[in-house]
Length: 334
Picture 1 (cartoon, helix red, strand yellow):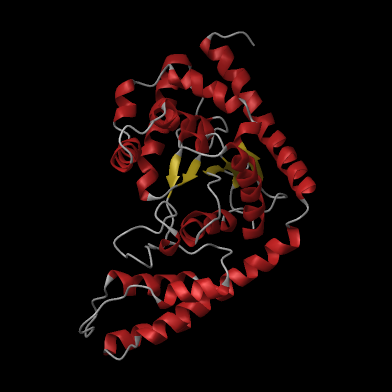
Picture 2 (spheres, one colour; picture 1 turned 180 degrees about the vertical axis):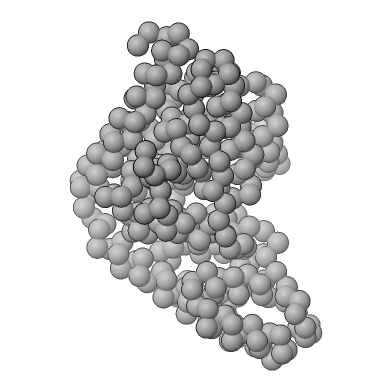
């Protein structure tokens, strides 16, 4: 490969919100010329938590559309749907057999989601898939022999498992898989507008996040009611809520407005009404562009399905070669 390969994936859990976009997708778009990029919509991962079958395909195809809207270029990048590349699950089984039970019990996300499920509903069903999905995640990465994986700090542990699996496989069966390295980028720390102590997430409710295609009136209402703080704001110290609004303005590339408001904050003259108005204007400008683009390509469902299938076949060609090599190395018929 003339370029280093990057692999990253997203679950089709509904509408993209600002945390998804600024935390990952914008970076995906920005690095398309620099790396050989492969991005996936991982619908199999979405099955590890309770879901409605009739919504899964719809959400998966909509995520493909939304990624194209955000700027993923199918002429530069492979964008696949995970379930259309069955080699992922075959490699997962092979990796299951070289991954220890102890490694999986130490995965923090399984612990967090299990505790959350148990606290919400006593006796709630917890699938084995939720326990083993880090191995599928490793297969997602290693099947394309990726060199880098863009990750946030909270995902580094799962990448470490992928590296451990690659090392163990190479030791047992021959040097084949590269050890994927994290591609850390400057990610704005965005939190809930309603509760700045919590991460912006759809797992709470609508007031805690802003969708990338949300209506202007809804955005302005959420920003207007955003939690800031009370009392004396003199000095350089910011409350989490105020810092979040500044981060949103900066993330929207409104450097001039950001710097001017920051001067006011340091001088103790900042009015939160002004801060919220600038934040809302910046977000509405951003989302309006995405909504316009989405309207242009939505409605052509047949072409979207065909594009998703074609791109997934390109991913499948790479994955099929890996599986042929792996089967030979581990002693399975080819």
